[in-house]
Length: 313
Image (cartoon, rainbow, N blue to C red; front, side, top):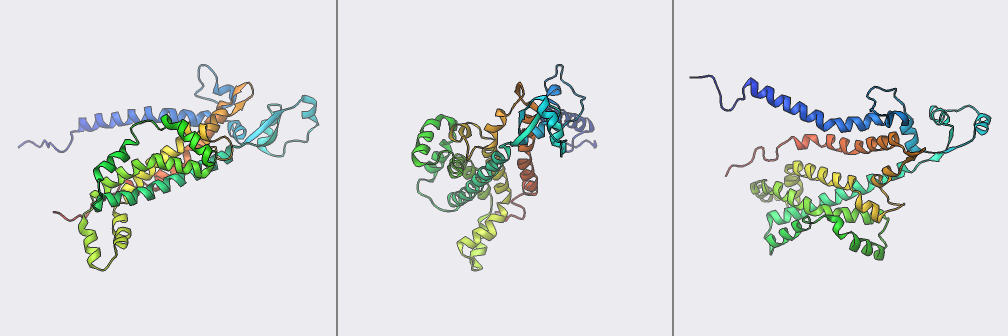
């Protein structure tokens, strides 16, 4: 018999698959690498044509991101004492002085509060609703599930004007609570449908055994179902966070100061003579970190199956 196996790929197939994966990874990561490197360029190098691949690194973009600066005359500049810090020296080289901190830190904190707050609420409510749809006889269950799914059939921005008027009437405009509730309402349908699929795959025998052992329904749900649904909960949380973290249209329409998030703020960073691209790239780079860290922390749940040891029917 031939040693060829229909289940084991040949060395050529492995080479082709590996090459495709590497090419795809390079194409996918190239824009991200370009953004990160732009954050370490000077404003001149950032807009140079042809684009500079080799350049002298500078932290000017990060300094401009976290500070507001003002230009002063040469005589005033010479009358000032020597710069006390490295970032003051960078600003002085541009004939400017630091007037105060920028609002990027506040906007970033707003993104953390609203993004993670809405994600927690979406996953919490979605898990309860998904468990109810999966385990109980809910009247008109199919119709309710379709209604929940139908909320994803049109872009959320299509209802922006009614939401704007409603928020203004209720006093929720430019508030953390209003944005958390809005993003939760948008994400809840995704959470319910994703989590219902995961919970449906968990054998009922687990809960029945727990109930026989004296657990209450809630205890069986908390101690048996939730650990088995960890993969689904982690996946759902990542998708919900990505939407809440990157959402732009509602943030522009419904916030302006107190609850404004980072996405609407980053494009408004203005430098001398136009857009400060190193500062914009630095802000975008820092904005990526929380989602990356969150995904890395949940990677063990994403890589683990939820039906290991399942009872065969």
